[in-house]
Image (cartoon, rainbow, N blue to C red; front, side):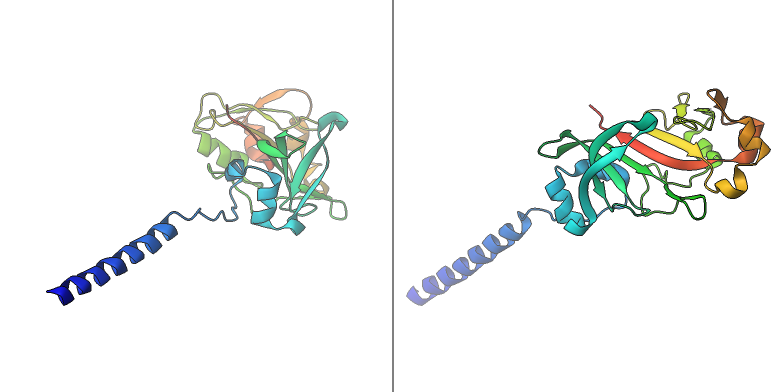
Length: 219
């Protein structure tokens, strides 16, 4: 009987040890991995965490330029590449708390083109190069955008109650090949500080593409 009790004690001790190990693994913090989805960058707490995930060589803090010559500071992910993303922080000193995420097509001086191929997309499926026709289909109804040829040109002003209307996002449309498309009569017809509907026959023929995406933190 004494030997049976000793054997049971050994088995119980072994099971308890195994349970402890399993619990330790189960409770380990989940490792954050790289993402190709712009919206998911809001889950990153700080620039330090951004470096941990994407690598120090892919992250810098630098001056960024906006419309009308506006300057500000932001963290750049994949700087000076087609994948560059600008991240602004609520606490700029500590670089914590993402408030906005911007991804804009890069300009190629030699070819007079915009680079609209990148790794990034949104949860809704929007990416650089998404066409006006594709956006209209995603939205489920026509939307309004401003005329081209100025700092805010091609900005979508109103999704008119469509499926994309609730997104905290700013999208800018344009052409990607200035050398071959800027002389297009349809493009010239949509120039200036005016508003146009996406179902306008001229806009439908031109079918401009997304050249800039900016997300804002929802509160």
